[in-house]
Amino acid sequence: MIPIPGQVFVAAFLAVKLGANLPISVTLIWVTNPITMPVIYYGAYKLGAFLLRAPMVPVEFTISWDWLTDSLGSIWAPFLLGCGVIGVIGALLGWLTINTLWRWRVTRDWRERRKRQTKT
Image (cartoon, rainbow, N blue to C red; front, side, top):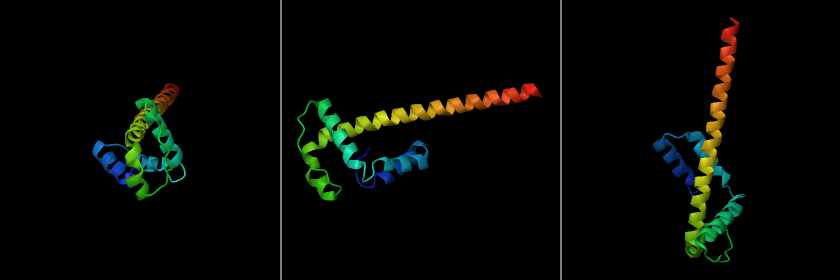
């Protein structure tokens, strides 16, 4: 949930440095694509404003460098807080889901292997 252009490069760099899955890291960046970006970033701003108890400033979101340099100045604190919170929650939910699925698959494979071994 890094609201910057070129976030795929940041994700790739961090995935390599932290030993994370590079293809998944780079692919999941596209959750925030030009179609979903306004909705997700508005939700992040709204969440951040709620957490900071700050009034929401009416802002028209456009995908451009001018918007980042001009409009972000008035909403940066709640916007970045919301992005951070959503990013952390998304990462935790993703890790929990993948970890649970992985454990389920390994346990299932072990049971199947045991059944085959007891039959022979």
